[in-house]
Length: 80
Image 1 (tube, one colour):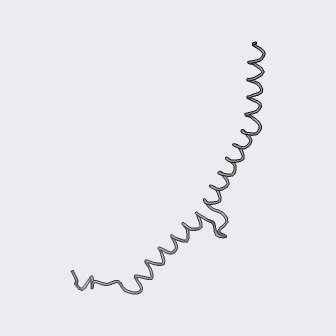
Image 2 (cartoon, rainbow, N blue to C red):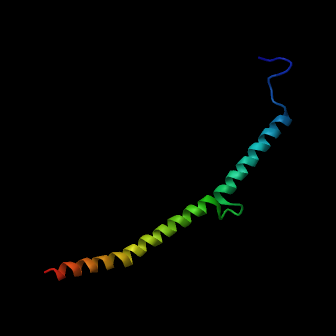
Image 3 (cartoon, rainbow, N blue to C red):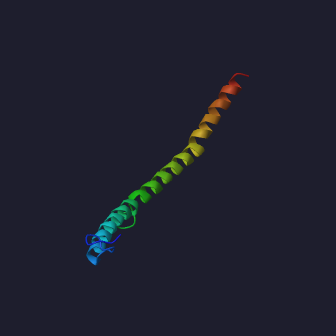
């Protein structure tokens, strides 16, 4: 419903004010996700965590598992 207080449209100034706030928020969100230089932020943190997890998994597979197998084998053989 149109009236004198609300003519039914948004002025150019109101639109710029609103869109300026939205652009600032989007910039903050982008910087949080990928950093200012597009090489950091949450994306990098997740990649680093995945890399650490992968490294830990490879360590377990290549070092710890063979040691456990050797110890268990030694215990089984010593009981026979």
